[in-house]
Image (cartoon, rainbow, N blue to C red; front, top):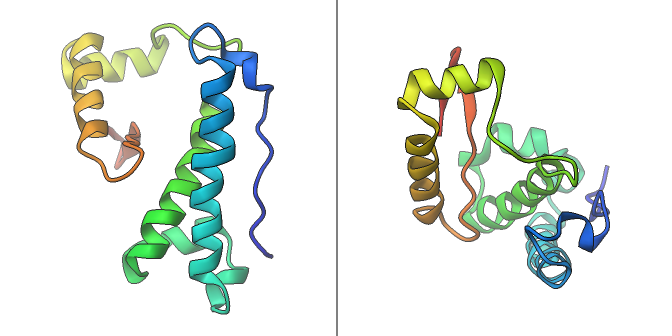
Length: 138
């Protein structure tokens, strides 16, 4: 397996009016592509060149900053594009809403903590809500 730059899953203008087409184009074709190119350069000639991103990031602490940072930017953008949808939006519902309210008290407090985590993160400021040991964490 070699690493390939994935296609955007929707047109540049699909998320308007929330994210305009020009911003999407620059973010995808410049920022995401730069992370990808630097990641490919960092793994070139090593056993990582043929490993999946899941395999690489299962042991991310063992890799150089160039692989962690650029690979992280590349991988996070893939998740970012695939977490958004032209038909998406709104506040969480059901079990996710309940888990957020249980952990943070209310959705607005979660949004504040989530935004602060993103601001404090290297590079693009990605933050993720994850489930670990049955509990949600930023």
